[in-house]
Image (cartoon, rainbow, N blue to C red; front, side):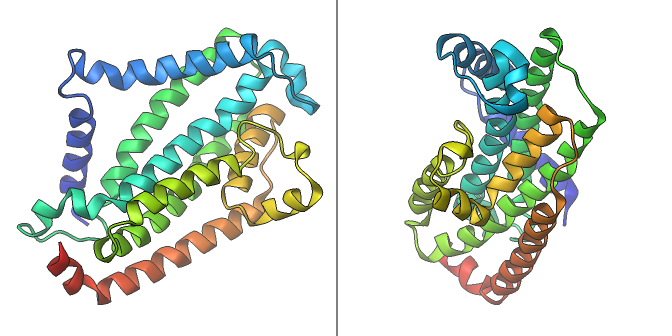
Length: 258
């Protein structure tokens, strides 16, 4: 893996996002800030949503904390998945000219989305400090949870990127499926409002244990439930290994099709 090349791609990706706008790179900070203000102020005060359990003890902003803790992670996950799916087409002009590792190329997408996630999370933490939220050391669990999340996004995205070379509709299919996936995951609602059979089916939703882990460590101040996270991390690692194995056998065809 050529890390200098990956970091250059990451830097250029961050620059190119808003290069044509008047404020330029400032939008990298302004957009997450506006989103945090909407999530924390609008959803708490205008919607007036309330949760049961310990989140209810957080007062006026209980729903916002519940929502944002998982929503920021989902936004990063889905953006990484969708953009990685398209990465071979986006860099096709370079793949044909420069000898690039196709399997490490999408790392820049994950790094770029991680930067945006960190900025948005930074604003979220400032909001929590402003309202006097009681932090605990369990928040440090967010790092391994995030790594597990991005490993899964990378594995799924790379697999879809390979398919998209041969089936151009994959990009649109992934976009639709991530929208469905979002609403099938208790991010803006709580799982206890679902029928029993749907609550049971949540065990097969890969993002469900991630959302629960983020909330448990922040809201409840406890360590996450490790077995589903370890299983998810193991599955993501195995999937990534399988995808790279298949991709290497199709590499010549991939480069020809691009």
